[in-house]
Image 1 (spheres, rainbow, N blue to C red):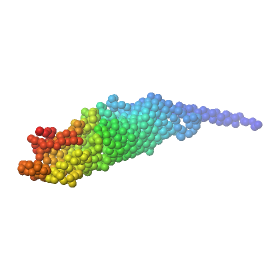
Image 2 (image 1 turned 90 degrees about the vertical axis):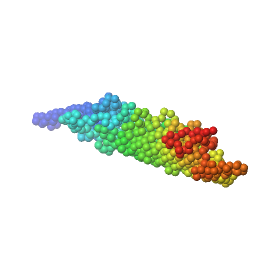
Image 3 (image 1 turned 60 degrees about the vertical axis):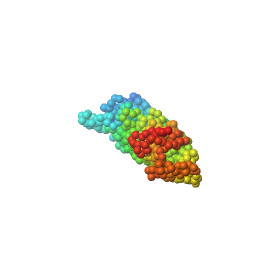
Image 4 (image 1 turned 135 degrees about the horizontal axis):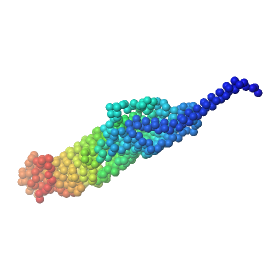
Length: 556
């Protein structure tokens, strides 16, 4: 064994002491770093949420789970690639300077995330995954908060004290939301907010200050149904959340229309949308294979192609021209579903135009039982449905014009009477070859309180023209009309045998206004079994004021 000199021993002792001190310093530094992670993460989280959403932030509970790694290894790697788990409960965020009667911007029941420890001291903090359970988002209406400007605070909002980052940059790679709720609050506190239940939402980052991609499953409250949507959301507009961009494609299925009074059917819709949270333009198509009005309960397939503007602040919906198909009938509507001042529910105001509809489709939808008539329907009408507190047809208002060509009554008794009238009108009462004649109708109408009032109703068949006015009571299924009839034949020619000869002296008295026979008539009774008769002491419809339709009456 070689003996060491005193000088060599001093060197060894010095190196050993220095090494021990260095190792002790490393362990102390590593331990300090480990203990600083929790407050560092809390501070970063509070700073980020406060600056990003310009809000006051409260976190009820926060727990840090460090990786199973020695403090020395963490120090050697300087935390890079080392992720810490963060769990907590009760995040509340409220906009600064907002009215206290507004709910919090965000509230989160439970949350967890993973964060790269090394990025905490770098310009951008990396958060790999954030999971949120029970998240509620309340988007305030535009103008409900004041921006915290330099003139109000005395300094720039982004200005930080010495030693702190001027602004917090956080890159969240993925966010998963379960059991969430989104409300877009109206300006009027008494109105119901536009609300969506967020069953599952996954957000994927494309980088800081960029929109996040999302994949979401939502439950629509009314009509109840499932929505699946993918698209982009953001970037978040802290000064005005309602201006945050939103785009996407969607599928809405199994929507039960039966929650609305008066209608029923299961709806499916697909399409796309774009805009901001407060104003969305949606384009798409919708189908209801079993669409029906409950007052008739006859299903007729309905499909539409639409473009709508939805105001997220009040739920109002404006329809750009919507192209629709009811059975085999094409029509177009435009208008809106609007909540007027003072109303608790929305009103429907539409303009409908049907250039060449199948009359069977319309009657099948609107009336119980089988349609009583077929033909081609031309229709233009305004449709008004105020907020419902009763049956649809008790509130439904119509005002329009119509025309039916090539009409034929499908109930044999009515058609037999029409055929008989046509034979007499042509002066051939025994000509059985005059059969299954077609009818043309036209007129203007109003509907209110379950009563359909015809200001003018023209009806023509071969040999006869009828000009009527009156009412059809939908609830009682009763008709009450009065008007005039012009026949091509003279009155004697409508008869046979001795009556034909006996009436010839009367022909000159009834032949007027360009007709062989001119009569005032009434139609009364049920729509199934109407009674035709003569009416006296009544003005013809053309002479009656159009602004005040008269209920028809018959002089007996």
